[in-house]
Image (cartoon, rainbow, N blue to C red; front, side, top):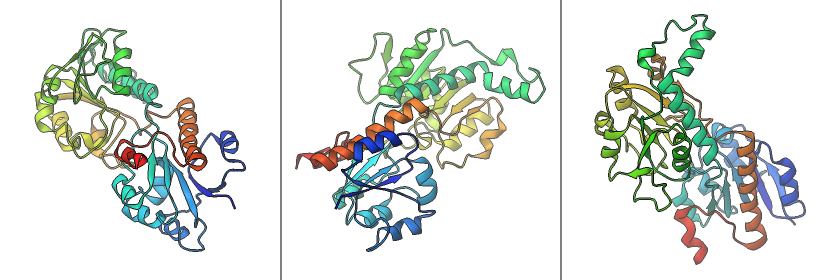
Length: 336
């Protein structure tokens, strides 16, 4: 009898799925319309009973069954031993509860770096030049009447502050260097692979003081929640811009909106929000803002690579007892 794996929202890699798992596993597709049905499926005799591995991504499966919190981890733990998460950010999986239940969690770091950095670049350009605002003005048959050239700026010579010079932040640094923009960054420590034209600063406060545009690229953790708050935002120059393609809760949203209301921030470019898919309606009151529905890391090319890599992690577990790309918090489990 083949081991069972459960797919929660596979979009593109169906041919690759067959090549990876034919003859190796019974593949079951998650069809639960809600959380209660999903939990019931793991009961003895349920449609997901005996599942040893789960493939998941944040978008559609989360909308139907919610995040993989303690309740879900406890329900699946008698049989599930590996969760293959399709994404670089895995804050929707309760990793510590997985440790308690002996469940490995893999992720796909680096795959969406280019796609997400490209989205961040678009937000930087559109906030500085009001291109999104201009398109919406044209579509409303107002031509460019609402647009003021005096409120727009070129990228060349402006300072971009990057909070978190990981894969995405570094890729964005290379993209804006073409203009060029001046690049300063803050990470937990200076990056050995940072180009010589990226200047390290020792605190978020100092980063904000220097930046014309602050772009956020840190994962959501207890330490980074609210990392850009009232103090940091007010340290920025009047008329500056914040771009966020990381996680909404890294920024104090109320402090950010207050700064928009009194003009301390000229605009924000956001692809992420604290309570997705809900968006604070007050953000919509500022037509110069550029707001995307968390699509920065999504393209066909990137999604295909991410799906295959996540599935390969699960396949490697089934064939060898251990997959690759374990989340950092659980890597010690592989050494036991």
